[in-house]
Length: 266
Image 1 (cartoon, helix red, strand yellow):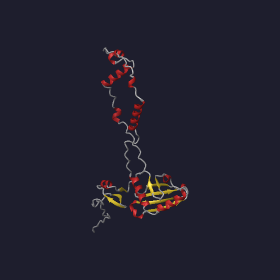
Image 2 (tube, helix red, strand yellow):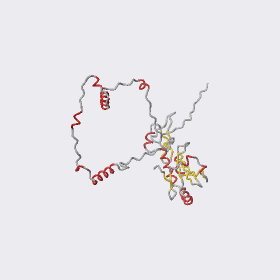
Image 3 (cartoon, one colour):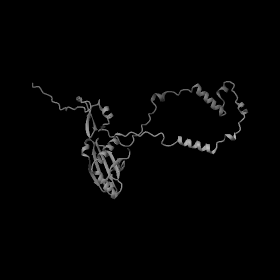
């Protein structure tokens, strides 16, 4: 019987960080760095992220992430009986009850309580006219309190940008390096300041969409961060804002008098 030879089509893939060849069945991560796609093994993925490389599959939105719901009580905590109050807690309750006119626990057990009538015999000191605060002193106290409560001090730390915001910033830099800002500046001289929306596309990890819109005209540009040398390309244009999707009208960038774009969240 003739023997069969099994030929596999497993390509040789090497990690761009450590140079190691990936084993069969090992799935690499794809990062974007310097306008090129980089293949990174699982062991070097944290190192690539620390160097500032952008993960191609990362599609974080610009908006803030929703807050995590609080975890409810566990089964054992619900079944556990309520603990009796400690002796100190019972003493505090008895003291509070005495102030409200209730019978304290010590009186019920036959103990003699101490009277506080001697406090009534202490004379109240008359107000010293010399101790009154002058208007100059009150103004000094008010100014010092204003200095301590000055808004904005100490300065709050700037929030870190998400992966989606970093992609948008890099795409705007690629757009400004091309010839498209001259067109934006020319149309803006006639139609006024445009509305600019830049966002990573959901179906691609490296393409960023840039929509520059006026009331009578709009242009859509796309920047592929995996091939920055190609620059920004016009993919669509129109004359009515109703032709655009709702997410393309949420402005998060602006254009200056020269047509250069900048992110508003930076």
